[in-house]
Length: 124
View 1: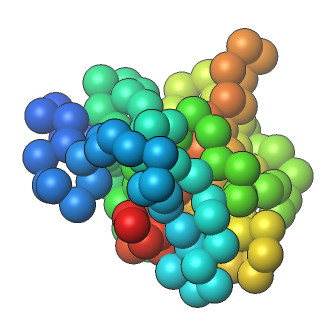
View 2: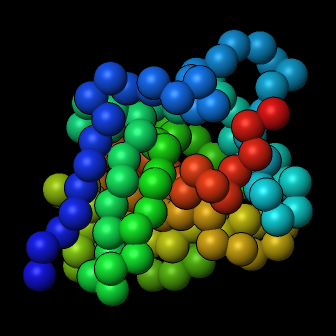
């Protein structure tokens, strides 16, 4: 099985996902408007904020990487199978208000970040 990975080398070319400043701007869940994270928590992983991956079932996900996402909690046990990021295990990440799937929490022995599905987030 081939794993599909497309990384945007130019970091954030789409203005919708650019890092923006300001304390009033937030990122919310599209399902319930719960505050998930902030634009200042966007981070670069493997030379990009934006990634496109396919899971083993062929479902394609466009994700952005965040250092913290206080509104996203674990919804599964950790797994090392088919991780999109070498050296990281993953857990399903869900909204802490409505429990909808928002992405994944990636963890290693020394690091942790959130890979959130961009279409499931409102950038306000």
